[in-house]
Image 1: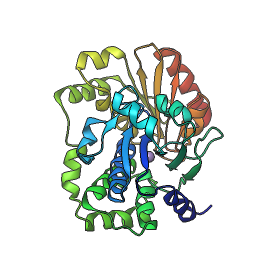
Image 2: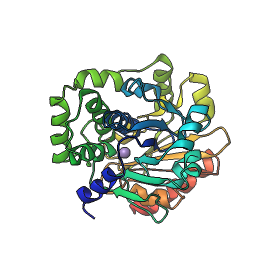
Image 3: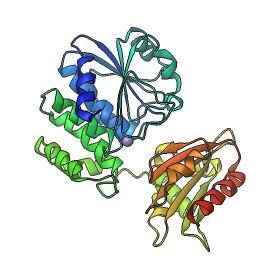
Length: 329
Ligand SMILES: [Mn+2]
């Protein structure tokens, strides 16, 4: 169904006075968090009662986007638990994958679940009314369109959330998902008063000494393949511990591998506490990293995907690099 038609159906479910729990995937990124913050403000303005409940804590970096009246909790918080218990509707943003909703998923039973997402749908996708449109550069674009379908002008505070969503998911308007529509919407967000330099400072000019130490460590660990257009960075749990860096500092680390001349696939391997390994894959060209990620039970976009492997770092490196070799040759 056309995007606008489904958005109209989503809108019909968002009647005034309804209690809405907004949620997004584990480890919310700028698109998930920015879309939630903007949608929650808009729902508040329309007379609904929004609360954000994410499977993992709302990122500190994006807290400035939240309306003071809107709580952002996890299912482990009493406030999050209460919001989920009393919700009429769940509005899930930036994912339709049950495995990425963590402890939120089990709490949606018997309630309507609306989904706005721009990842390709899979057989396990959840939701009663689902807008799943990979043509959208970010979920923020779909939230913007939802407001437009409702006939509402975007406010400055909402526009900031949507700007963060779109700017982060397009790599600041550089990735292939950047379209004319992306720039048209962004123009509307700037007209609403968004200050791009201020947003840049809020999102990117936030290095801490620990974060910078992690960059230094990552560059030491960077490997460029001798015979394949592939570069990768492998980080142990101890690298995070010794630098004092947080999970949020890992954001963008894989880009150091991606921006090397000639590299077509960039990978970040990260050892987790329990000895499993998280793999983030990026493609700079026509290589489909989502299909590589799916071979290991993961998923994502053609140019940005990921998977979680139960093996340790070395075994994971060997398996994934072999799969990349196969995909590229
Ligand atoms: Mn997204």
